[in-house]
Image (cartoon, rainbow, N blue to C red; front, side, top):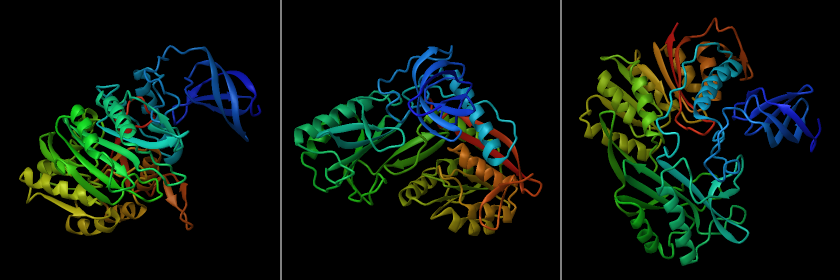
Amino acid sequence: MEKNETIVAVADGLGTNGEGIVRHEGVTLFVPYLISGEKAQIKILKRKGNVAYGKAEEVLTPAEERVRPVCPVFGKCGGCQLQHLRYRSQLKFKTRLVKDTLRRIGGIEVPVNECERSEKEYAYRNKLQLPIGRSGGENVIGFYAERSHRIVPASSCALHPEWAEKLISALHTFMQTCGLDGYDEQTGEGQLRHIVVRELRGRFLVTLVATVREIKGIDYLLYLLDQIFGEYSFFLNINREKTNVIFGKEHILLKGKESFECIDCGVTFEAGAQTFVQVNENVRTKLYEKALSFVEEGETAIDCYAGGGLLTAMLAKKCGKAYGIEIVPEACECADAVRDKNGLEGNMTNLCGRVEDLIGGVLQKAPSATVLLDPPRAGVARSVLNTIMAQRIERLIMISCDPATLARDLGILTGTLVETAGGELMKSDGADGVYKIEFVQPFDMFPQTKHVETLVVLQRK
């Protein structure tokens, strides 16, 4: 099997990114958008040793689970990987993904509950994040291709409600009318870099990321947005740095309120333009309510990576005492507003800073607390895990958006991964682990994509 060679073979599984796995002549071949059981004509794109990557030029025997993708740029845009797979099979894939990843990376064999479905298979996202660039001398608005910063032009997105299509059209009109250019990452030229929109129960937080403070015709953009959104706020964010980070440090409010108030799970909360809120409201509610079922009345809870304080407030209302730790100042301000609006002044304490810097002090005040960890994709800092194990906290609740980093963190906590003198992790039998896993439940926060949210409950041995 060599590069540019064409073979006919059958996929016998799905990889971690949802791609088909083909085993042919001793080589493991990964083929995007191929389903297990399908026979296809495959062109070899790359081979290194016993691993190769290919492209399905023609599916000769389609699987029963194959469906027609609804998006015209599916396969080009990097946002979705599974639109060709029937939804029930997406759920089975994600259940198996979590179980296999825990075993492969963490050395953990544990029962995994079936993935909790999303009520909406499409149009479920409450956040839109669009890069604005230049290509061939023209402005381009869309989504990044897989593993690149090449923008795939898009006029709509099936994962977002129809307001997204109207916004993209309005942005094109604004830029063309006012003579504005998208940002060129190579030269640093161009005024507009991104537009980010967050919907909060029919109200919107719109942020235009630009390289300059003065945007020609900005009032015209606001006029166009008035035709799309009812109640909304508009921010101008200044980012002149050559960086992959979307937002710069300067946020300027040009219209509306700094944040909006919502009610979810019996908690009144506020969210601003930079506040982390789960993108799928229906699944978020299911996830948070399930997590809450594992804490008891009268205990203390510590919510690490707490965002805008919604879950911290839910914990405070049930337990009686909860601490929230969050690094983003705006999110901490929103969490304080949540505390005040829900009458939790004596029950909810919000701390602004890094979890690794603050967790030790909080555990000294509440050594018997239940700790909830909801980290970003990179997972939990090693120092945080070490602090928790040293304190021998009775119960841990973990929420993860990445099965790989979850498997690593769980391996450390359960002892199936141990750290060598050189700082590397190696597999072990888990005999010396501090915790055992009692519950694992995937939640499909992101239908049509390879991503999955996972809830795990651990108990001290």
